[in-house]
Amino acid sequence: MKIGIVVHGPGIVDSGYAGKIIEILSEYGEIKARLGGTMGRTAVIDAHMENIIDIRRKLLPSESVRSFMNEGVDLIFLLNYGKSNITGHTFGYKVHQKSNNPPLIQIERPGEADGSIISWKSDLNDFAAEIARKLNLKFFNKSQIIDEIKGRTGSQKDGHKTYRKVAGVSPNENIFINNIVVGRSNSSKVTLLAKDGILTGIEGGNLKEHGVQKLGKIDLDKAIIKTGLLRNSEVKPRVLNNHPVKSGEKNVFTASYLDHAACDIYKLRDSDLVITVGDDTTLVAADILFRFNVPIFGITDGDLDKVVEKGFKAQGSVIIELDYGLDDIIGEKIYNKCFKGKESLEIDNIENFKNELIQIIKQECKTCKIIE
Image (tube, rainbow, N blue to C red; front, side, top):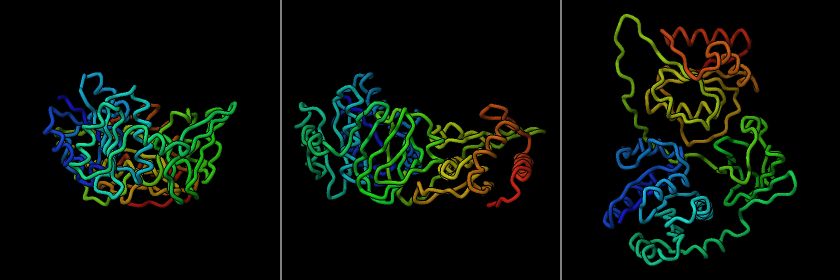
């Protein structure tokens, strides 16, 4: 039997259960594991599992499921560790919906009192129940989960307006749309409202205008919604020796520009310096690029949302804190003046380039704080 395993999110890796479950499933046939999602990549690296779980491609969970179906696997497991059984079950339901009725079994929150296994196809019920007994987890079939989450999630349209309920929210949590913080909850019942594709309100929460501007126009029905922290485990980060020693009379270095945390930060792992714009973008990028020993030059304005439990930054990183609302403005000036519309450029001295950036900032902003 050929088994595809989709590993989603850092929690299932940080808990150690991804490795345990992969080992158990290998007893049943030929297995192949790959990541679905973005933040899990860092967890896979920290756990030394990149040779077991394929993290080379940036794929949504449903895309990872569909890719396994195209490869002709017999069965697909979805491994997830949601912050509650409600969020986990809702997540699995949406992945199943978007994946064209795959032969899918979900393992959710193993090790927790409410940990479960869900068979998303009736002819897999017996096998799923067997794995549930082996892992000491509760078994659910598809119809039970649909009945459970009915009314807690879903979207509806009313003319130019779209409403979308968000399941499993707790008060005082970040609300992410497509990996951008757009607000904060103040209730356990949250509904997002968009008009003509622009997020305009959060029932049960407060809107973050800055985040809405970065988000731009969306299809709220298809958007990826998350709440809470992107990674809530306190872990020891693993630093890879990413940069070979450069030789020659004149070194050439690569500086890259990043103004959006939803971009594929991992493709910048071969840069020598990354200029990041925005508090959350800077925090997430610094934490990821720390693993590859890539310093960041962060342009922030103090409007920070806590998106990871503890962040790291590589030696040589510099963070500039400006007055509120100026980070995007200054970032755009640097992008136009230095990068001239390109994502990366070659420089011959990293420290000189940092000083050049600081001078540009000081010309535009008289009050700024340099944090090294």
